[in-house]
Image 1 (cartoon, rainbow, N blue to C red):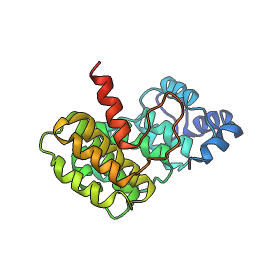
Image 2 (image 1 turned 90 degrees about the vertical axis):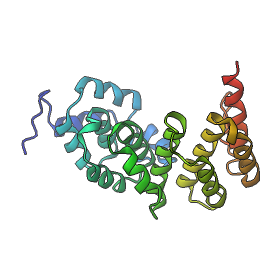
Image 3 (image 1 turned 90 degrees about the horizontal axis):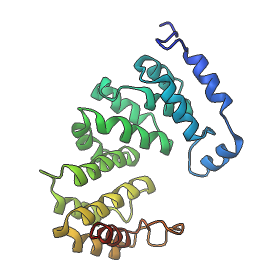
Image 4 (image 1 turned 180 degrees about the vertical axis):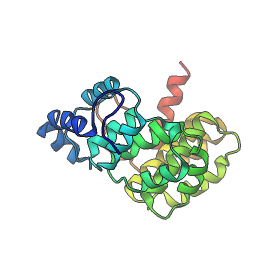
Length: 227
């Protein structure tokens, strides 16, 4: 298929722009978090705004398998333009945290297939895939909790979070905190689970930031909501 896009830029030209934005210092910092790119995200977003929505260009950028290219693809794609199977294949091809997060938050959450994928991914044996399912569950806990078995979710978290791999553990912990924040009837149990498991209790937290340790996180957010 021809590379020329409606905006007049080819995928090769866009990748050259991304290469020009590469900063070794940013790559070094990102590398500590598992992300293999060196492009300032504000500049990446500026490029995305300039390109606007271009689904075909987004597809071509994704196929480069370059992390910065894939991040840009997620900014210029049409989230509702993907079929369920496409989103599943995309998620399973991703292992860098930032691309994983942006794919789930910027694309899958806006897709008509999000609930079906939430159910499938949550039960997946791959912990990285399962973490995406838990992220979608957290979104429902906060925004559309009707039909969710919150007590059942707490049962699973209580039984499995302590020994879960890092990415999955983080996603389950977020869900635990969200249940405690949004649902007063489950708050005491959510806090109790956090206190018992002590997941992320000693996580280094910068000044003026809220600890990801669920009991602290829950209490702080409830306090803010009560203002």
